[in-house]
Length: 459
Image (cartoon, rainbow, N blue to C red; front, side):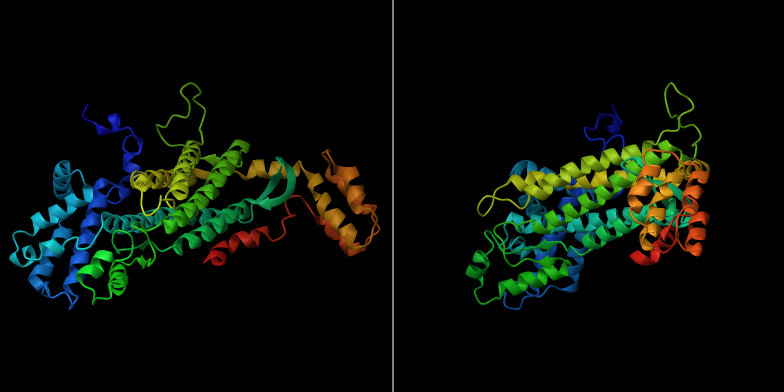
C-alpha cells in the first residue's frame, strides 16, 4: 500500500488527516525538534550576550545570521538528520545538540564556541520550553477554529433572535424561549471559557538538573543565573517559573487542558441539543449533492457532523483529562512518565480541532424550520399557567399555584379553556387584558433582545 491514510493507526493521520494539517508543524516529532532547535539556538545567543562569559565573544552579525538561517531553513531533511543521529545516541535531545554542532562546524566563529550549545542544561530544560512553545502555537490554531464556530453560533442566534420556540425541561413542554436565545446561551458559555483559557500563559524553566542552577553556579558563580533564566524566558514569550525540580511541574498545562475540557463539554452539550432540534424538525439540513444519508434509506439526511463532533470531543476530553491529572505528578525530583504522555498532546488537540471542523460544517448546513416550532407552541397553551399564576400572586388571589396545577397539570388545554379561566379571575381589567392577549408564541420575556445583544454582551 502506498496511501499512508490506509495504513495509519490513528484516524487523525488516516481518514481525517487533511482536517488536522494545521497541527502537523506543531505537535509532531518534526514540530518538537524544530522547537528544540529554537531553544538551543536562543540559549546560545543569550550566553553570548552575557559579558561575564568571556569565553564567548559577542557574536558577529554573520554568526547571528548563520544561526537564524539554521532555524529559518529547518525542514524535514534537518529533522530526519536529527533522527539519524538519535539512532546512535538513543537520546533525542543529545541528538539535537550534535546536529547543531555539526551544522555550525563550517562557521569557525560558531565552531569555536560549540561546547556552549546545551551549556549547563539538562534535557528537560530544552524539552519543557519546547513543549510550552508547542502548546502556545497549537492554542492559536484551536482558538482560530473556535472563533469560527463562535462566529457562526452568534450569527445564527441573532438571525433567529425572535423565532419563538417551545422549551423542554425534563423533556416536557415548558416556558417558551426563542431559538436565537438558546444559541446565544452557547455563545456566552464559550466566550467565558475562551477568556479563561486566554489568561493561561505557558511557563518554562531553564535551571539545570534539579532546578537550583548547580552547574551554572559552579562554572560562573559571579553571574545572576536566575535573572539570565528569567530574561531568556521573556525572549521566548513564556512565563518564567523560578521554583521547579528537574521538570517544570506542568501545572499550567493542567489548567489549559482543564480549560479545553470545559470548552469541549459546552460543545458536546451544543451538539446534542442541535441533534435533538433536528430530530424535532426545528432545524433542517441543506442537502449536499452526492452525499448519502443511509445505505438503505435514501430519504435520510443524518446529523452526522454533530455526531462526529460529539464523538471526537468526548475522545479529546478523555485524553485531556489524563494529561491534566498525570502531568503535574512526578516522583521526587524527576521521573520519565511525563515524557511519553506529553507526546499525546497533539492527539487530544487534534480530536478537538477535528470536532470544531465538523461543527463548522454542520452549522453551515442548518436551516431553521419555523412551522414545526410554531405548531408545537400552538399545541401547548397550558404553558401559560406560569404567567397566570404569577399574576394571581401579585393581586393576592389565594392558592394561585394550586389552582393552575389543577387546571393544567398533565393536560393539553385549548385557548378557550385558558381564556375562560382568566375571565373568572378577580384581577384588575388591564392585567386581565394582558393575560388574554398572551399566546405561547408571545410569552417570551427578554429572550429576543438577549439573543440580539449577544455579540455585545460577550465582547
